Length: 230
Image (cartoon, rainbow, N blue to C red; front, top):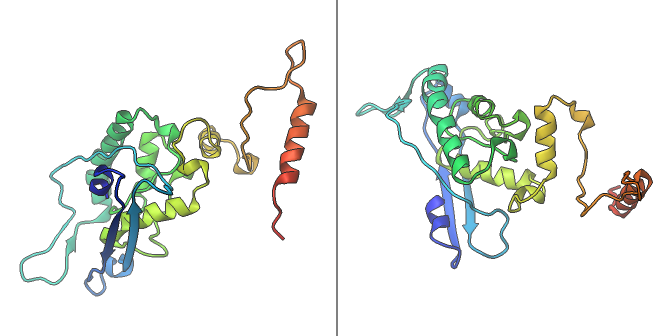
């Protein structure tokens, strides 16, 4: 995916990922493996999400293996994989990526993590300072672990659930930014705003006070112009 994106946007390229893995009967993997496929078209026309940068890190860590002549993989205990593998490696790699694009963790609208034990995404987000509400559901309870296809499935899920501002160039404040900030501050979710409107400047009186009646009028007009679903 990253290779296709870094080859430029002049030509459209189709990236396809699919996986169908065999699991040992009675194992954890038999319960969690899923069969899935996803495809993404890259290019410079009708763009839904803009690619910024990629970053990779390598570490000698083996979470599963397959012995010669065996049909199935052997996995180590999930808690050990999470604590000894994911925890010391993934947060550092993500932090370096955010540093490269000069984006603080609090500005991340959506965060997803594939190929790791359940709960690892929330753990990594907490370590980085990304609010739990910004973590994309890992699809484990619906699709299962789709292996090579899972990263693209998470990307598709993110785009489908995202709002317009979430898939923009991320310049300026968005409703997702505000919601993540409120969640991080401990504000109850029922107090979150349902929409965000940006204005060039606040309407003020000659004395510099904000004209609340004007703001109420603007809000009433926007609500009236919003299509209702019956």
